[in-house]
Image (cartoon, rainbow, N blue to C red):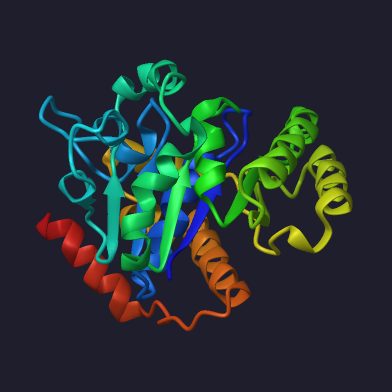
Length: 275
């Protein structure tokens, strides 16, 4: 049975989408079947994985509206074993429509349940809010990954996020748990970074992943090319960090995986060149 994981943080600009798509890409490249569900109306995960947002694109909005079948919406990405349910700005109006729907907190769960066993992991990129769409994502998920920057303001919203997860666990989804916390955009030279990192470790303890994501220009460039970092620049420090995070993630889940070798990277580069 597949595992559903939400990437959530109501604060924007913390590397949530970057972490979702790049972790998903590496896990897929290591031989696991992965689906990304883009639940952010900005659709950054969609464009970051190279999906063109044309007028004929079927999206998660069509599924919420009940206008189409889930298998007609799933798109293959440039990475083998990695699919996506895309999103566009149309999703912005869905939250208002969902308020009137029966079982409104469980709409996304109803969409994912029939396809859950088709994937090893389903990774959901949540919007930067704690509204009904995020509540739906958490209700459908087995666990949550919280990306957080090593900056003071990132700590301020954590209590609200943790309270939301606690309420979801009590009222809607008793099995949900925190998968882990990923520290992003980390600058080891900064004293403030070290202080905030210490606070994050005190708050979350062993739930914090050992792997952190450094500030890296290649990571910032990759989405504009519609490519995850393992294809855009697999030798960059950002790529090395996400590969390490994927290994740690799979180790925590006690899942066997294929090591990404030099030959694998060459194959991925050929896919890019032929694409």
